[in-house]
Length: 260
Image (cartoon, rainbow, N blue to C red; front, top):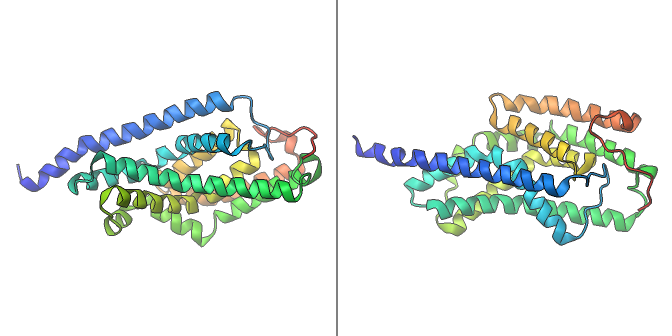
């Protein structure tokens, strides 16, 4: 057996184990998300709670939604890491960096939400402008799917080989930095989808699953980049639907009349 083939032969079980570990972690995160979120969906404008509770929930739901779609990239890193002696710790650090990028996005969203609530306590309530804010956010999310930034980041997420090869960094800190960089591309790819999730109800397991499926289709399946156009049309149409007849939107929890 040629010696050059041995590293690849040893790498196959590692890739399989890494993929299985990520999918199991995603499944566990979905179970935890369902148990914690059941009955908490308050539709658009759902209160995000205290910062500590929110961060815990956000990290769990991010893992549930995003880990399946990042399996190809992490397994690629694991295979090359086996050849470059990065090991399991390097792979774990890569995933940690990826989740740090999404956690940062979640924190920025939390700050924006709290800032809006402080600036105009009643503005986001459904009885005031809440319906139109949610509808506008959905339209913006749909239009974002058509932007050059979305296309650029989606291309990276679908074909990360050049990024992993040219941007290789050694050591645990290097692996975490690579995961962080890849996570930022993923944030750029999926920001519109996450805005849509906030608009529809960030505590809704139904909408979480819907967005997670869209992410998986766009990033992993053949010709998934073409599905971004479908997503754009769907979200713009959904925004118009929410603005005109929200109670008829399947899966949308229409908030009760409330102030603040």
